[in-house]
Image (tube, rainbow, N blue to C red):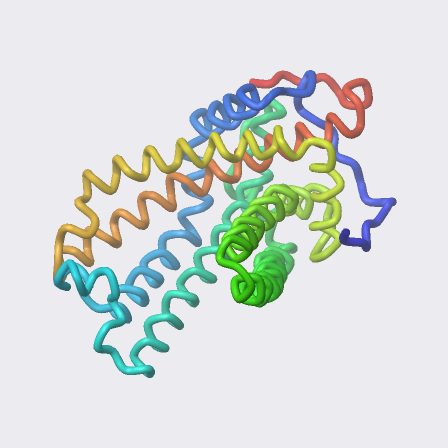
Length: 301
């Protein structure tokens, strides 16, 4: 269990009339996203577009044109590469992943005020939302780094445990691998509202993670359900867009351009939705923890 919570931190007022279920929460997130898409897209575009382009170029040029490999080589794209080349590719992939994670969290933080205002019946303004987050940019950068470090530490311990158990029995190794995956999913859900906590209650680092854990306690399955449904929607839309842009089916400069456009569009579309989903889940959890009578009654939308 994480510690370091500040008992004097402000408790947010909920814009919801009552606690909502899984499908109601998803619907609220979709409505606030759809009703304020222009404002939210403008906010996330400021950081998402340049970093997404940089990430695609970094990973693409490091991996090379994998689409030209034979089917056998595609199963092992590292075949025939030197250790330095493999290190370069893996490093580029990790840097790209970290960049996307950090920028995604910053974009979600920048969007929070606009989403909160929209849920409360106030017309959101992209400038106001960005200004509200500027003083917390360092904390927004540090939070994904902290989560990444905690995940890597847990992953390292888990891999060692899987290796040891696999030495005794393949079945034990398989069970340990499954437990590792379940632990990662559990941690993701427990820390899923850390950014809204940071933005609304100004809790940072471990304190934000601890507060997120406190809010999700006793509500893990409903929280998981909302994010799982959101993930399914993202996968469906992403798959459709991938087919439209024929990602992976084009080579050379044409393939690079299409991959870049696809990455920019998907990040622009999905980041505001993730922000809306996280804000709705957070405010709903805060309302459940504080009691419906403790919050002002405001229109849902």
